Image (cartoon, rainbow, N blue to C red; front, side, top):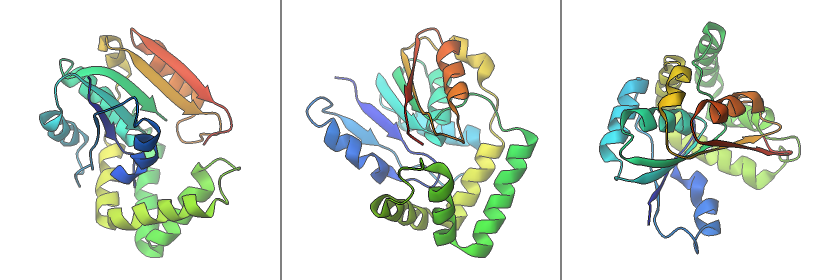
Length: 210
């Protein structure tokens, strides 16, 4: 049985996958989650996770976790038997997007993590879920648990991450890409490009999802 190793996104911790663990309890007997270290170097991130990754794993990465999963599939292909990528993008940040990360970090330092969590809920959730009080509470809890220092380090790592587009063709394992139709951060076109760039990819669009 392949272990399913889950890598969370920015401002998320391993608890983001608790509903998945429950949903897959009967079909996945070895689901593991990884909290991401507080590191401001993308390459260092990848190296640290690669060292701890069990052999022949299926990797599930969400957002930042999906960028790391792509890099791991290239760096240690013998350890990666398959990828599930949620809200993914193989391209690097544009100069404008990288600069915006710095502005968001400075805004969070000034306004506080609760304000950041509220802004994320308002901008990243689908319109149908933005008023979900329980979901917003989870986002706030994870943001506060992550803290400003780790958020700042992760934003720096993401702003400096390499473009992985040219490496997609080297990924030979099966790749499933899931993207929400309402996702404004990693829109459907970026996910579709990843699925089409790998040797064995499938793209699934989730209607009405952020």
